[in-house]
Length: 146
Image (cartoon, rainbow, N blue to C red; front, side, top):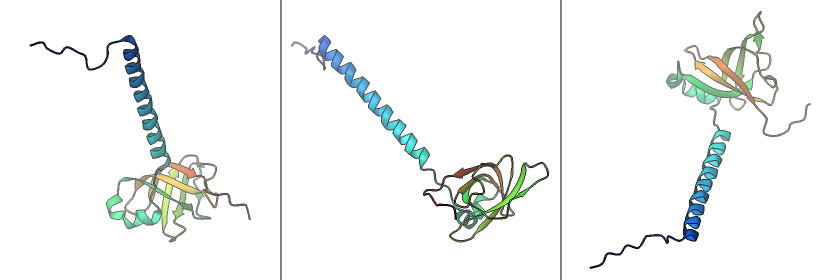
């Protein structure tokens, strides 16, 4: 009995070129899908509000947290060296406030009334955040100055 020795794919040069082209196209498509996913994932970062942080305070004590809020007007106090900062952020929906400290240069839009401030740092047992990073998010819509 003769064995069937045919290859699963045609072995002509044209068929090999087509197979290589399909493999390259599949790799390119997968790379584009992966890069798109990573971009969307990074752009849609979620940050809990001060209200959510306080509601989950027992689980978050002593841990690295991220929290978003607005700077309470008049709460910023600078140390003598100009780098030690103390301030309060709050959730404008609920007025839940979280005191914070930070050592470093603050972002330009830090005290802008419509800018959200994102803190990353340790949530302390006294309910404050010792921030290692402070950044601002741009407002989602333009609000003219009053």
